[in-house]
Amino acid sequence: MLVLCGDLTDYGLAEEARVLVKELAAVKTMPVVAVLGNHDYESNETDQVKGLLVDAGVHLLDGEACEIDGVGFAGAKGLGGGFGERALQPWGEEVIKRFSAGDHRRGPQARVGAREAANGPAHRPPALLAHSGDGGG
Image 1 (tube, rainbow, N blue to C red):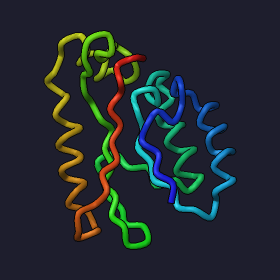
Image 2 (cartoon, one colour):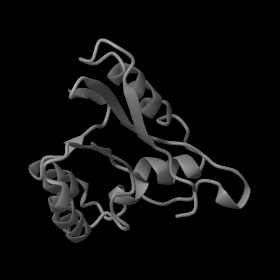
Image 3 (spheres, rainbow, N blue to C red):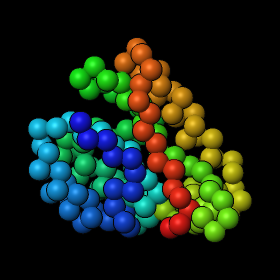
Image 4 (cartoon, rainbow, N blue to C red):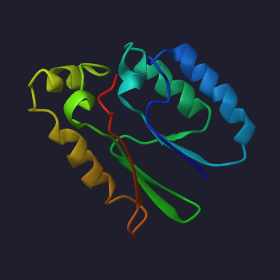
């Protein structure tokens, strides 16, 4: 099983996702579960990135849960801060850009999504996949 925890692309470009899909062909018999990271939202091609990954058989989680070979997975895109020079910068999704500029109203959604995903189909404590950017851009 291959677990990918965000920043699957550098700039959120569909072309970058195509490169990843091509590389994942080497492990096509292995289940792949993933969450997106802030970089995957940067270029507003997120729907294309998601579609390419899902079409390639990646179990892409964002507030959902799944069970693979008896192992439960819950996935949520992270949202956080960091410290000092590694503090969150305005990079990626619009919500992160607003969050880093002081708009914290939408930040708890990622935590709520992860909590809801943990009540998914596995009926036992799942593995939680989350991406929390290091703030380095």
